[in-house]
Amino acid sequence: MGRIKGVSGLLGALSRRGFMQGAAATGLTITAMPKFAAAGDEKRLNFYNWDTYIGETTLADFTEVTGIEVKMDLFADNDELFAKLRSGNPGYDVIVPTGNWVARLRQADMLAPLDHSLIPNIRHITPRFLTGSSFDPGRKYSLPYMWGTIGIGYRKSKFTEPPYSWKWLYDSGEYSGRMALMTESDELLGMALKYLGYSLNSTDAGQLAQAEALIIKQKPHIKAFAEDNGQDLLASGEVDLVMEWNGDIAQVMAEDSDIGYIVPVEGSVVWEDTLAIPKGAPHLQNAHAFINFLHEPEVNAGIARTVQYASPNQSALALMDASYTQNPVIFAPQSVLDKSETLNYLGEEATTKRQEACTRIFAA
Image 1 (cartoon, rainbow, N blue to C red):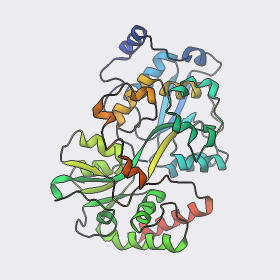
Image 2 (image 1 turned 120 degrees about the vertical axis):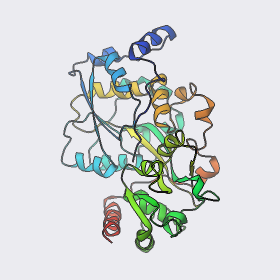
Image 3 (image 1 turned 135 degrees about the vertical axis):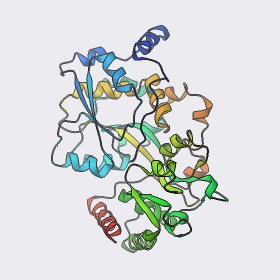
């Protein structure tokens, strides 16, 4: 899932040294970090993440607290993440797959089980994320990182009313050459299925064929299938509307009052990104320590302020002000959530068919 560049550090401009002093002054406990760091792993961690889906100084803060140096590599979408691990883990310790991909990675035996005893900050996570996961019951292989929706980002001055329907992207030429769609097969086809009145998790061949035909018909009007820069195309004025993750649009909205975001009336996807440890991770203790650190309330709040996605950490939410917790772009109204769905892993055959449909779309 495309993610925006980090633009602010942990808790604003607080330095790492100031963070440590503040932690001591407020009684913040960085739970068992030095113990984990000394547990036998070399002081290294290899992190595979979306671009850059983290606070600006979070990694440096972790290094200062633990002595563990972090190397972060970036992927553009879940397909790339899966492909990187398919022939064996090249050395990553923590990865950030989207929920439905956790099930796919687990089925392919690519994930290591989590030791919850090494992640005491689980207690800060909102309970529904721990008990209600359809893709990882019992959270044996993943913990939530951030969550949100997909919708339409648009330039307000170009519209007399918000683009309330997916038709503006999938079934209209009014903004020909001024629109962009996402590239990932589940999302690209899923939103077309929602517009057509079907479940975004449909495996019906006829319904999928309709969605594919709809996008191919619309293709002459589409400026780009954007891998990781739809919000940038909108911010730069290259397009007037984009299909994008809500946090990406929330970030550019903070910089440009002429940009808006809406989840279409047909509904959308409610997604969850996760923290997981790939099988064969060379630094298991450090991986657990890092996941635990990311769920320290102050740390998690700092990340959420930067990336502008919804935190699943209830203790972090308690530290946030109303401009975050009451922002409908970050936290979609219940009426929107009621019409939306969670993407499921549909099995290897169904996934392959969707990917083949997208290959035909891109080649048409």
